[in-house]
Image: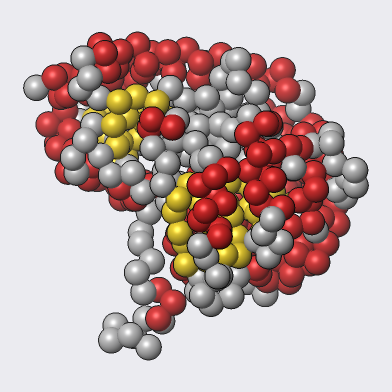
Length: 395
Ligand code: PLP
């Protein structure tokens, strides 16, 4: 026990920086300040009508009781189908028995770490990384270890760096890959994933957690590739995580999932059964409707993101050419990662205070000196927010 009475488990577990900055922006807005919020980790689009209709129908027919812990069969079947569709090279396709529906992608990652990690185990991921990975590893009494990548290598983890990091560890137990990545927008091609897979084949005790939550937010000419499609031989030690938060703008509906071998799936289902149980029945009905929607339903969103991405890149172009900032043009996801130098928390506090622009500091993503700008917002806010950022940087 700690002096505060809290469990040792909570020692050093940080609050989400994203939520903290958002709260500061909301507080200023409540005081009447004009705020340009570029922090959002969520699409601003409305949830597809079919999902809303599905919830109404589930309500009207009283499909609102407990569901099986891993989720209703129809939803798990659709998830298995989607995964198999994204991984045509798998010789043994997934079925509903390999799927657990979770409270967002977050719970799928949490479940996987809880059932696979022991105290002292090490979890590897490339910098910049999604800020919940180290905290979730800590909650599993394991240790998160970041493998440095930098702007000059396109923030991409090379097979050589991965191999050297895993070789130097006695307790390597998991490797997390997030493509497209939050916060950098980096996406790995099929060949690049296959090369990482060849390294992972040499480390049979290491599990792979592939966080594919941004699979549908991808910019041409880049194409999304699921880790297992590039590395089918690693099927039985890969946990693929995905969900509908980003792909169907359903952040508050909390629909995620894991796809993994049956033994791990069964352990994750047991863990979930003794903690949160199956997710909300109404939400699962909406999840079924979302997964039945044709891909072309989402074309307008991709077009909007593509346009907004251009707005940000264009706004920052001059400062970048002058060498004042570094900008990573994202291949996927809806963030632009900008190298501004110095203390990123201080930068975000100052620009919020002076210009009313809310951004996320890079430090909690393992990238001090960088900030994350989300373009999941309307064009008017984005244009003015970017203009203010440029003014601030030009001072
Ligand atoms: N993984 C990454 C990289 C994310 O950015 C997020 C959400 O921001 C998640 C997982 C979790 O998503 P969800 O809202 O479905 O829990």
